[in-house]
Length: 276
Image (cartoon, rainbow, N blue to C red; front, top):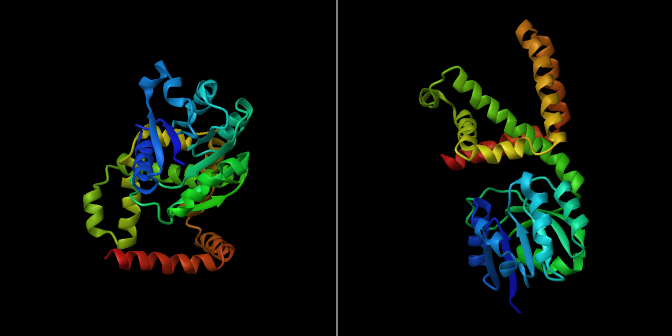
């Protein structure tokens, strides 16, 4: 039996990626795209859907949840794509009494194949009713990682909050110093070229998206403030030329990382050799 799925925000980058994936790899799903113009008559597209996915900015998610719920049919699975999970999941569970699940695709809108791409699943309500959908995502190649919304958000504070903030600051500082990136690339090692590419990749995308991600919630903002203080405090050893303190800290981090440091060296070498 054909399943009907509606993507709210389907004209955005992640929504368009979802259109491509569902059309090519899950043709048994009948896809409906819900755009801004559809709010004039939301029932027309939202009624009788099996699954409704919210692919909207974080700051609009709760507002959109409240708007769509009156038009959902009994048994419709409600889910979202936001990169924080606790607040949207809580809102869906609070305002909607049907099946709910939180999803976070850990990839950008440019993917062309689901193979080994990670989707985080945060269980909500009536797992047995949305199990078929998660199973279908697995069948076409997605790697499903199940975790609590709390654990997800804690991890994303570092993966998306502090990491993106660090890259943002590096780009800002390069501009501040008037660095000629093209000249730098001529002198850069393969590893440094990769790092510059990461900076360029971030700034090639929409500023609103990254403002939304970096400042998504208070805990992320607090962690970034703590990180900034930590950098300022540890830079004192560099400014003083205290090599011994630097070496001790370096060794402490290396020991804390354990086998990961050596594995990361090997993995990055493999990537660079493959690229070249």
